[in-house]
Length: 168
Image 1 (cartoon, rainbow, N blue to C red):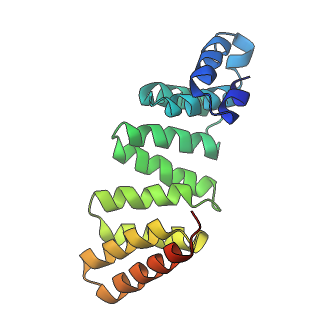
Image 2 (tube, rainbow, N blue to C red; image 1 turned 180 degrees about the horizontal axis):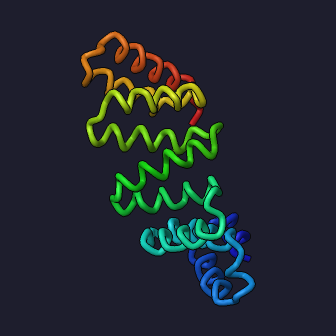
Image 3 (cartoon, helix red, strand yellow; image 1 turned 135 degrees about the vertical axis):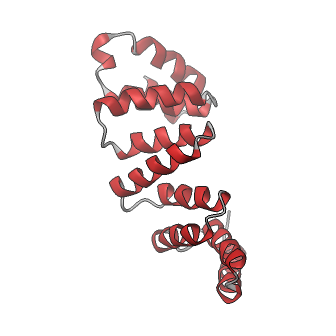
């Protein structure tokens, strides 16, 4: 029921169903329930509740990469960047083919002006998603701050070329 509401984009209904289900002992033992709840709570911007739900799910299955991402997203939205960085890094290790956690590792480094670390993380994103123009733009910005103007121009140029052909 919670998952069906999530698929339909009905986060409020998903949270209502989740809150009802989590009171049932057998359901509360299923980590996926907690992750569905965290996803719905993130959709409603109830980041503290999402953090708690993700923590409960991870207590049951600590190496669930998607659960770690949900937890990291809640931490990030709560401005707990140091903890979010740890969790996004962990998610990147658990889900080596996904660029999403690496992107947020890069963003956190970038926001905190750790430009060399950000360039490294944006490069990992570019290796997995070469047409993600935002990561190239941000990497170009980091190169610019580091004084690597040729690399900055190359990244900006590639991002512009991708956006020129992007149908979005």
